Image (cartoon, rainbow, N blue to C red; front, side, top):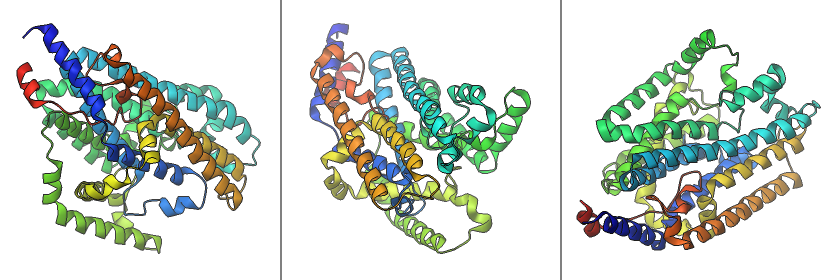
Length: 419
C-alpha cells in the first residue's frame, strides 16, 4: 500500500470521526464539573451545599481525570498517525497555550485585584494574595511566572500545565518500556505523598535554591499525589485509543464493592458535617494529598456512573454540553467572577441576598456565552475540512482544557489494512 493511499485513508477516518459526532454525555459531564467548580468557588451560600455532597469526591478529581483521559487518547492517536515528534510538538504547543491563559489570569490578579485588595477593607481578596504583599511584587511575579507561587483559585491550571509537560515524555517512553513501570513509579510517588514527601521536598529545595516561599503558597494541591490520578487517566485514554478498555466489564465486576464504598463515604461525609472527628485517620480522606479513601471513593463513583450510562445520557442537555466543549475558556471566565465576588464581599464571610443571586446569574450567563462563542468557533474549524487536519485529532479536540471530548472511532477493517 502506498504512503499516499495510507495518508488518504487516515484523513478520511479523521473526517468521519468529526462527522460521527461527540459522545455528548461526556461533554455534559465535564460541563457539570465546571458548574460544580464554579458553585464551590463563588462566595455564596451555594458553596457549602455543593462542597463534596456525595461523599469524598469533588469536581476537581473528575475534571483532572477526564482531562487526562482525553489527553491520553487523542495524543496517542496523533503519535500513531503522524509520529511522536509531531505529538510532542503539539503537546508543547498546547502547554504554551495553557500557560498564556494562566498568564492572563495572573496579570488580572496582580494588576486589577491587588490594587483593590491593598486598601485593606476586603480581607477575603487580600488573603488570596497575601504572599504578594509580604514578599513584594518582584518575587511574587517572578515565582508565579515560574509556576512556583500558585495562589488559591489559580493553582489548577499550573498543575495541569506541569502534568502536560510530563505527558509529552510519558507517552513516547511507554511505547518503549510499556506503561507498567510508569504507573508503578507514579503510584510510588503517590504513596510517598501520603507520608509527607511534599513537605520534605520543599525543605530540601529551599535549602539549595535561592528562593523563600512558604509551602502553603505553592498551591493547595499536592502534585506528587495528584499526578497518579493524572497518569492513570492518561493510561486509560491510551487503552481507549487502542480499543482495549473494557470499562463496562470492569464496572459490572466492581458493582457491589462500589456501592458499599460509595454509601460508606456518603455516610461518613454526613457524619463529619455533624461534628464527627476523624483524628488519626484524617489523612485517609485528605483532598489535597488525594488520600486513599478519596481514591477508592472516586473509583467507586466512576464505576457507578459507567453502569448508569442510560441515565447519564439523558443529562446531555445543550448548556452542559456547550460548557464541556469549551472548558478551558469557561474555567478562566469563572475565575474572573470569583475575584469579583471576593471584591463585592468586603468584610463579610460571604455574599447574601440579591448580591449572591446576581453574582451567580452573571457568572453562569458569562460562562454560557463564552461556551457558545467558542463552540461556534470550533464548529467553523471543523467545516474547514482536511486542510486544517494535520494530525490524528480534529481542531475541536485541542481547544478545550481536556484536549477534546469527541469520541473518535477506528474502522477495524481499514485499520487492519494499515497493519
